[in-house]
Length: 152
Image 1: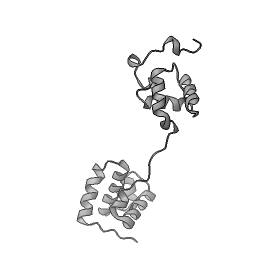
Image 2: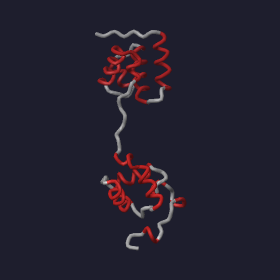
Image 3: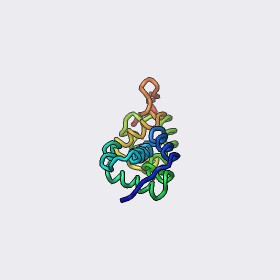
Image 4: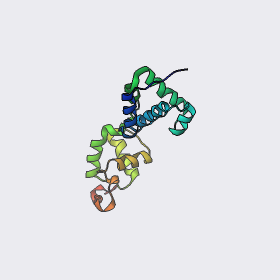
């Protein structure tokens, strides 16, 4: 069985970072260490920290192998959205030529970038980019002009 000892300095850092670290995942890891320092069982730690038993074991292994610095690291960087590479170009285009529908925006995105996305993904992209027509509320959204209507 592995034994864990925490110095006073480490306990102070854990206590502080379990509530105030900017990354929520690191906060959860620090909470696991805090509960372990209080002498709780792994099952009880998993329950109180709202995580799995395997995660508790991983956090404790990270601490034994690399100390608090290893526990502070996060490997998750998020997914790369291919449309984000073209965001500025698309934003400029949609401000000048606001789409009348998500389907129209979908066709324009594919024509301009070659990236084909579903309607839901296009809608989310427009909302995320607040200056695109889909991200603004109706009173502030540019109105389509006769030139921007299909078939005109």
